[in-house]
Length: 128
Image (cartoon, rainbow, N blue to C red; front, top):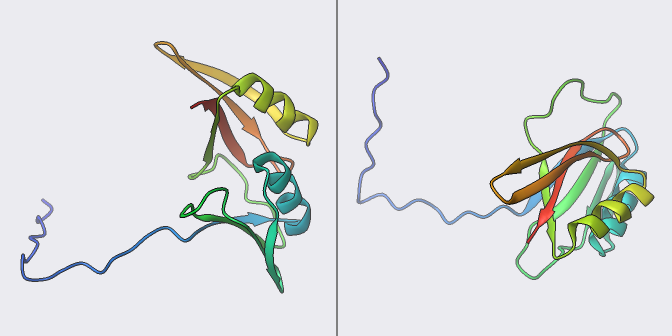
């Protein structure tokens, strides 16, 4: 049986925020170019095997890419959800940049499309 941790009310947790979402990539430059074009942003920094994009909006986390020697196999534990006012156009734009449609899903009247970026990383496209 797991013991439940009790929070001491006198201890204040440090302030935290998501600063960047790091994606492993076999070719960090190419994947960064894909995501920059899809999100309408640009590269903000490069260092060694890392490429960071400018945040899509003030206060939003940066999307960043770390070049690794081998692709991660299997279903991902983390994926990005990309929302916009016209998800059909967004899907077409993503596909024109090299994304691949995987499958569509519905829950009630909410629809989303599962996609793969050019390296096979999953992401979803849905309406705002």
